[in-house]
Length: 425
Image 1: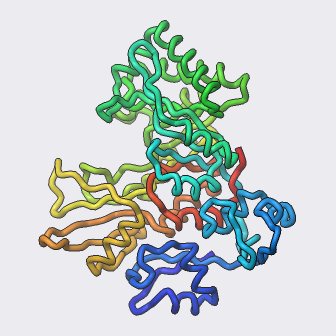
Image 2: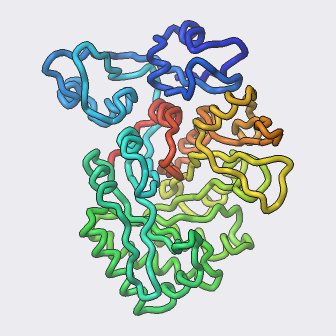
Image 3: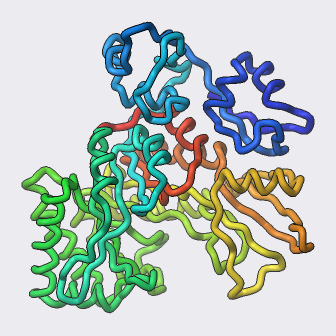
């Protein structure tokens, strides 16, 4: 795999010719927003097939996979043009293997709301070990707030992806409630009711684990939070089901701030099977323009986490979005959350060249809209994703968790599949 950065005057055809690959493969793999209008600084992922197979009459995806000693899921990963579906046609060429040495094996988790596009989920599921619909809430009596999750769970299980029940203190207003967390962490009756309801929901809905995400936990509730996570692990372990807990991105134990003080890395990692480091949102809606997940900041969080827990417990959080800030930055004026693909479209529409910050390992650009308003955009591309994924073998981490899967990002999956074998559930 190569990651090509578009230079002035280049076209998809000239890039395909330079690397000696079919134009159709570049188009199918990268799913470019506008193949006829490349942006200077845009990335193109180039893959080199090692083994291919031409579909014959009577072949099925399963029969081809068996003959090639591959899983159907791997065959789907190697052929993104299939869009996660098993329909194939005689004469169609499928890639069985690429000229790429893998860096190891990892687990992949991803989050999505119930209204995620079904076609997008179909294309994404082959790349996942776990899938986590977002999110079950609960009330002050420990009753679960239902989620329209049946189709998502069924789709995940059909593709042999393990669905995880996501439990959070998210309120209908969209914020995390520290008071609700305090209630369930300190009231034994409420906690028992919630634990029983969670166990019932996991069994009845077909979930294969639990992902706990209490944010802005009071500092005085830190130990109780770890006890609650341990309690859920004790209930689910006999069923062979893991418990994951999400951790705010701390860089030292006593880090001040409402987001951090209730998350004790050592206690929570001991209580859970795995943790998710939420290593994103340095660049955020109401903050100044900057990378969403600068690599130096991500490293700081990982390196602190490794002083408190073993690396084999850690999922590294990876953002699948960017932000568009109006300039000059004004405190309180919101940036717009955008997809990584749309960021390239914006650059194309406004004739902006994409630059790359080597320190942050993140792409960015500026443009002026039709009203004369200047903007600054930070997002993710194949280079920034490769930089984040490279931390997994460097530190010996267990896997990655994507927030979130609501927007397409084809290049991410190309890079992931090129670099790693994906652990099956």
